[in-house]
Length: 203
Picture 1 (cartoon, rainbow, N blue to C red):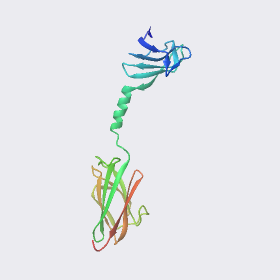
Picture 2: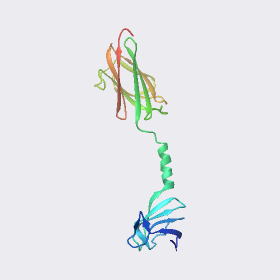
Picture 3: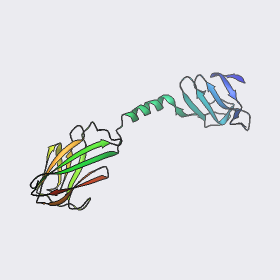
Picture 4: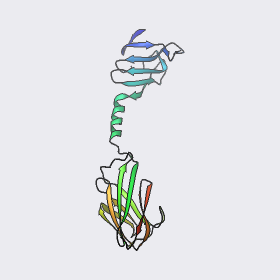
């Protein structure tokens, strides 16, 4: 059925999912243009689809005075979706490789990847700390220095530092300490990774 009002020609459907409206007024309308404010004869909760601008409106007023409220805007949604494409995932994969490289010296190689295992193309701030158990309390090493990346903050001298990786999410720290079994621990965004290293004279 086709009728005409001040906003143009539209197709009227008297059923939605097989159910008629209580008063027989328009309940779903497709029209090349926006609905007319304060129009009459539209069912409460009627839906209007503007086929030109890809916008869905809902009548939040009455059958006597329609108030058209935007329910979905395809153009705006596309803009918001494009913004999501440039938001970096906030979940990360951390890798920590510890190696005993010389008497009293170990290296900690840190790699930060995104949530799907791809290298990050940005510097990242990672907490590194030294302990005698995986995820355990800090213990002081003799020194902690960076050869790749930069130590931004010494949190606890000899025990923990905040290190900024290079632009590809990598950092290398050099830790000196007496011989023994230790753990390097790294954390970012609540994620903690621990790796053991045995420092000995045999290195």
